[in-house]
Image (cartoon, rainbow, N blue to C red; front, side, top):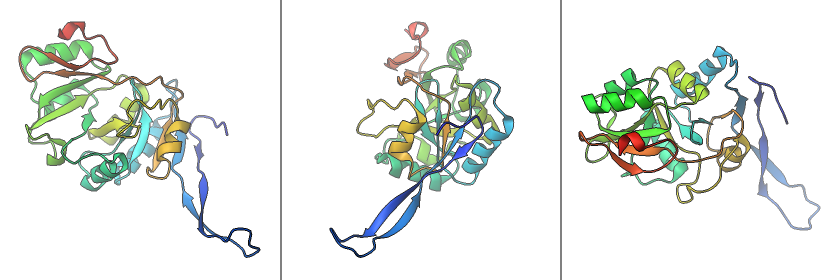
Length: 239
C-alpha cells in the first residue's frame, strides 16, 4: 500500500496455534504485530516525524532507518536493554561490539579521542559513508567498547538518518539491516527490511530504495590513518 510521507502502516500476521489437516474443526489463531512503517523522505520532511522516531528510541525501542550506505538497525547506546536486544536480533557474538552514529564532529569528540590529524581528516570527510575507529572515552558504555577500548563511530550523510540522531540527543547504535551471517544480502527497501525484521523491531523508517554498500572503515588510532575496509566513499585521503 503506497502511503504519503508521515503516514503509518502496520500489518498483523496470523500465527496458527493449532491446526488439524483436512478437519472441519476451527483453527485457532493469534496475531503478531509487525513493526510500524513510517514514510519520511529527505525532501521537506516534517520535524515532528523525527521526534516520533526519537521518542521510540528514548523509551528503549529498536528501529530500522535509511543511511548513506544501506538500511540500518539501531537504538540508543545508553539503553543497555535495547542494545542487548539488537545483539539478539542480529544473532551477533557479544565480543563484537557495534559501531554507533553521532550527529557531528563535535559530538564524536565526546565519545572518541580525536587527535589533530584525525580531526583534520574527519572535518574534510564528514558527514559521509565512513566508520572511524578511535580510542573510546569514559562516556562510552562498556557494552559498546572493544577489548582494546576502541569504538567505531560514524556521522552519516543521509539527512533523515542524521535528523533522527539529532532529535534523540544521544549517539545511536548502528548495524546493517541484514542477517549477521549474510551481510551481502541485498536489502534495498523498507519492504525488504520488514520481511526480515518486521516482527523484531518497533519502527521502520521508509525513505525509498537504497543500493546497499558498506561504509569504508578507517582506523585513526595512530597519526598515520589505516584503511581497514574499502567500501562506499573515496578513501584516497586516508592512504
